[in-house]
Length: 331
Image (tube, rainbow, N blue to C red; front, side, top):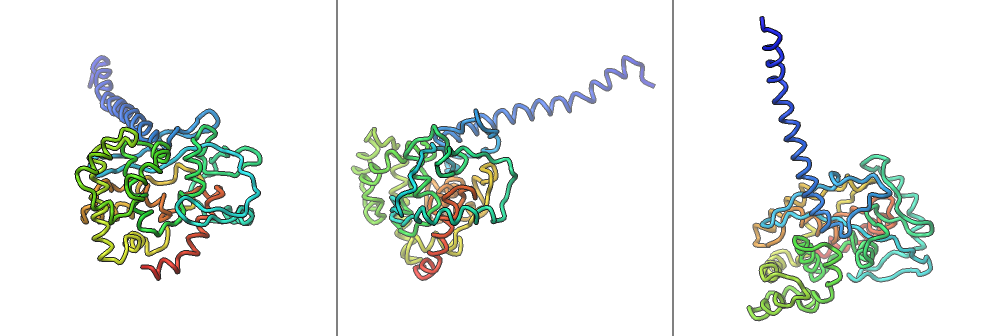
């Protein structure tokens, strides 16, 4: 039988491993939160304001590898009041946006969808303004808000525009969406409006000129990735008829529609993006890790991840439904 002193030592010894594991878990969680904060600032450009919400960094965790480009996609923006006067407009990608008169008809429909997640989402919109995804805040940059309102989640079928979005998504490894979007016109100019046939012909002088332009903030290795991807797109287009047909074929020419009520349920990578990434890498593409690929899929409307109470959710779904037949024919 153990003495009292020995008994105390024995119990202390038994508890120490558990205490040690708790300390390790605590340090690991802290490291994950720090990494999450770092990468969230790239994807959610201005961060999520916590003063009026219960959002946590842990709900936005992601992983990244500079080799496989595993970067995630997300957002942040401001909530401007949009006048409900115009009947429709065109997005920078050439896709017609649904008229605002039709938006009211879909407000109730979104709530009828089966959704994943709880009821703890919050409303950051102001009276009289359109309700956007919860990562859109009053501090968000106008360029990113426009991207959310007009482009993100809208199905894109043009090879040039898909090449552009793939390239911009790859830039997330160094920059956030706001920074990228503010330089989008410059990128279009130096990369020949992202025409794969022209970019593929860029020589060493052109690559050096682009990487030497301090306004673009693109390292030479990033420029080379874009040029190499253009060459890969040409090969894919020969095999599948178009880069669009190849990419949309991965989702059977129909967007994957997420029905999320809270941003914390939106994935940063999916089995589908991992499969697409693997095939792209096999074909020689670069900067196409599964997280960057999912960012691309979200931006190109291959994955519609607007929250169901966002005014863009029903619009993007409707645009996708209208395009299914056209996409199948094109493929």
